[in-house]
Picture 1 (cartoon, rainbow, N blue to C red):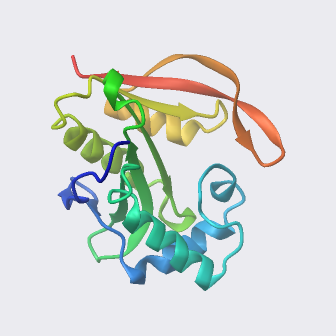
Picture 2 (spheres, helix red, strand yellow; picture 1 turned 90 degrees about the vertical axis):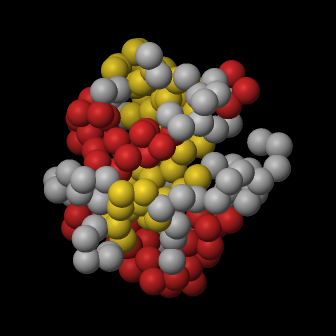
Length: 180
């Protein structure tokens, strides 16, 4: 990207809110670090270390300023952070951006991922130069695929050996949502 992006806005969905990360969100990162999968496909630390979790939170806070994208903490009604969602406009010049998200294990199956995704998508469409949003989901990650389908994303195809996960490369399904 070419320079800083606008600040991370505070957004409200039906089930969750999206907001910039806070120092108090370290507990969500610690729980995500204990998940066998999240650290393999995100920048969440692979061990539940408070200093590493705090560094993750700070990186999320710095992403818009660095021009990388927008990273939100997913917050439930009581103020707890239950995950993260990001909008990454690396291909914005071509009208494309990608999204990624995770929900801590204790908060899954409560509609948080799909509502966070719907909320981020609604905001993404305020960026007039975006025309296509993409997700890359491993074929076995049915929960993530279902969350995306609830928001309107459609499966477009299989990208073989697309994603490095641990010591191997894995296939992903590309899912997309078009502005039209």
